[in-house]
Amino acid sequence: MGKIRFPKDFMFGVATSAAQLEGAAREDGRGLSIWDAFSTIPGNIGDGSTPEIACDMYHRYEEDLDLARRMNLDTFRFSFSWSRILPEGKGKVNQKGIDYYKRLIDAMWKRDIVPNASIYHWDLPYELERQGGWLNREIVDWYGEYATLLFREFGDSVPFWATINEPIATYVGYAQGGFAPGYKLEKYGRQANHHILLAHGEGVSRFRQENLKDSMVGIVIDIWQHFPLRPDNQADCEKACMENEKTFHSYLNPIFKGCYRSELLSYMEAGNCMPIIMSGDMEKIHQPIDFFGLNCYNRVLDCSEQGVMPERKQNGGNFMENGTEYYPRAVYEAIEMLRKEYEVDIPIYITENGTYNCNEAVTADNRIHDTQRTEYIRGFLYWISKAIQEGADIRGYYVWSLLDNWEWCAGHNMRYGLVHVDFDTQKRIPKDSAKWYAAVAGTKEMDWNE
Image (cartoon, rainbow, N blue to C red; front, side, top):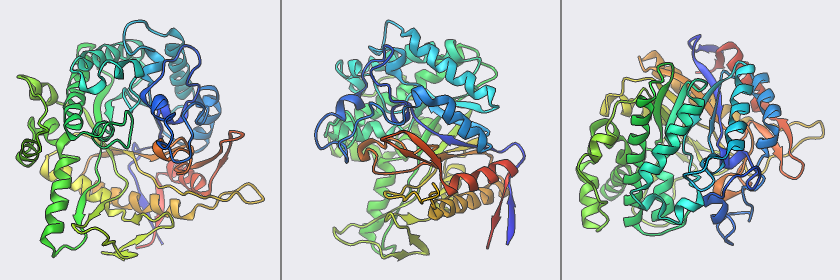
């Protein structure tokens, strides 16, 4: 049994989002979001739930931050609810929303926990969706006004700002229908994609205008690299390559190289789904950022034939009880791709990583034995440490998530938390993984068997 040690200034934390944890969806002047509306349509959410209550963090944030402090966490990722700050998405400011986030951020600092904020995490104000949402180019200015408001209200107390968390969720909501607002047109998805990248660029510009010298601005992208299920099958290889082009490369290339890749342009041209791109758009998107947030959960194995599934053991990986592959090397491969293909030399933070269980039993002595979650996190931390040893500038790691929460279309069916939540009583119980993670965060080291 050996030890893996992380740098003394390496930050351990957890990641959350407003829509998934806060609840209080109709309290203190908050407006509705697209997810409030989408979740009321029968069949959209696995268990029929809505984010109306979620984890009730709006009322219980002190309790939840106490849990984070007892876990020795250095930092806490959260997002602002656009609808709580600007109930109609623009115009009149909801002071009660401003006051809530000031209390939340102050509570973090009082516990020596560093705030890391996302300006936008999927929950567009419903009133803006009624005006075209991410299909309306005016949204770039609407987003910019919202971002400036946040920078002026909270800029002195938040050192990390992510313009957008996982922009691909917006594409899914407009092209595939699986997320809010529920459209199913590829042309819509590609136009929404372009506008959210423009919003990112607008956010960076607005950040620079505020001269927040003690803070950093970046973006959070999820990278699920696609590989062929059968590496010797040409059709599988071609499908995997194209999926990579349509997903993470469609964000990374504009941000780091200032253009869409030729493969994606050809795909959009052939599919009649080319977005409207105006003069100066790519320059706006392609601005220097201060850090990159990498969300990484796994890889994807693609097959060109329907019905062909990976074996329970595939290419050295193992499948967990929830049916997903355990492949912690995915994070190392994503970091390697960023460094080699995009020459990313700014600090990288692993802004989300975690796994879920659908059924977690609470024992008679109020414990949850989630051994697979502990081993999952341990494996990913090993590969992160390897990347650091090889020169990657990785400065922090965030588990998704602190609490079991409202997991979008799955509702309460997927439990990602280090802390169990009884959604009937809102009782919190730290799982075994929380106690293990607290020890790692407190010592900056973990046991490892080669």
